[in-house]
Image (cartoon, rainbow over all chains, first blue to last red):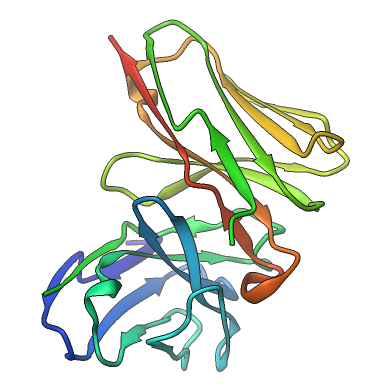
Length: 114
Length: 114
């Protein structure tokens, strides 16, 4: 299906484990973003990417790693999960830079770290 | 770092009434966007208004922007139960880790009762 998808939709993991959240878009958008959404904080930008092999930190990058070997995929890895990383994670894409155009969001991944 | 903040945090109205949500921000912007989030879903873009625009319409939505007061409002006319959702404003970040990207407010939770 066309659009932007995330997997898994729900994930429970233990403290210290590595977790990878997947994001795939079919529009060939240059820009992709990872956000986390927590009660009381709204959405906060973790990492973003302007193109394949170009990534940069957002507001809250600590504890996360991203890669973008292909335009359509932008996986987010928690190298050693902590309870504070329990959150809902959203991936988004856009054909233009972050604030100048609308962003298209995936359905989200609800991650619980026990 | 919070750029936009929505007011009120929660709003409950009857079907057919108008709903008004406000967004205030701290630093000058190039544009401001409004998004809707239904429960358990990703965000959906509603309207983008640029700093040189004062008002924009899209169907039952009307957005105003007052750059002198650093504020924006989203008006939903003749609300429907299907409008029940959280509404977020997002502005472009001028500084910090999210520079050049969107910064989201914490949202207004709108409940429209049939």
